[in-house]
Image (cartoon, rainbow, N blue to C red; front, side):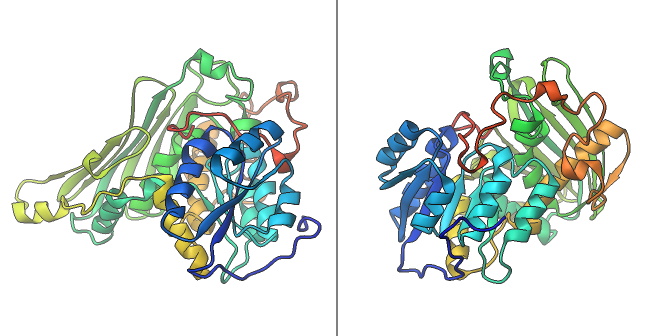
Length: 408
């Protein structure tokens, strides 16, 4: 796929005095509720300007630009890239469009910040990574805001230094509730439009945070089911994961749970660290319980999280902009962004085949490399089940409408 006509790739980067030119693609709820507020907040303290927005709905993009103070509304991504040459493109569109839109932006010389889920397959992700420019970019990063903020940073440092001893047992839980009305929307519960069920669309945030805290995994066993909803995908999944450091974890992803919670718990040799929240966390949402015999003054150091920086789009975007200006690969891009999608793919493969799946085994030639359902009987979508909007132009797709505070 070549760059859009008239677009010239550049590897230059904005200086700390030159504004970063940003374009937003997709103007639905996640763009209005998360991307735009983060960009607006950061623009108040650094050179940054939103120069354009793209949406297939002309009225919607014009209204969004008026709200955002962006001068240029577009209904065509390629034309926007050619006209505006943005430094950064943020994608708030459905997962099935992410590959083509990201590759187009990268080849036009723009960095990309892509809303999760990243894309429908590892094959798509690898195509995106192949379009990056090693060295000083451009790069494509995935929105995994839960691993950012002061709480996650502090716990990651404690675990990396084994201050609390070796991590031994972990639990990763995304148990949310979605009713029949939620799934009455035609694109929900379909592989082609959502990319997967709660494993992909909901639980990927907590699984990404778990991987960020514990490091690489080595093997996974899993189960999945459709217990309530009439959908193509699962509505619940469970898994057992072994990590390279020897720790073992349980993972639960559900949209069947009236008492909603997002939780990570890690039992180490000398303490238990636990995070309990829903759609985002602050320092107060973390709790560290020392084992008997740990000196109180040492436990107090563990519990000192410093100034509170909540997990948020703004927290992640702050670092991404620093990386863009410096021309260095940002977190949650490349292999660092791929690891969570690989775990999701492996969970589906383990659940649908009953086999133990090992890290690194899903590659070209494996059915789960090109599609997360792996064409498994009883799980793969049937031709008659394709959504009615499959003809939508992928370069200008309308974003998924979803609650601003809930990224799925």
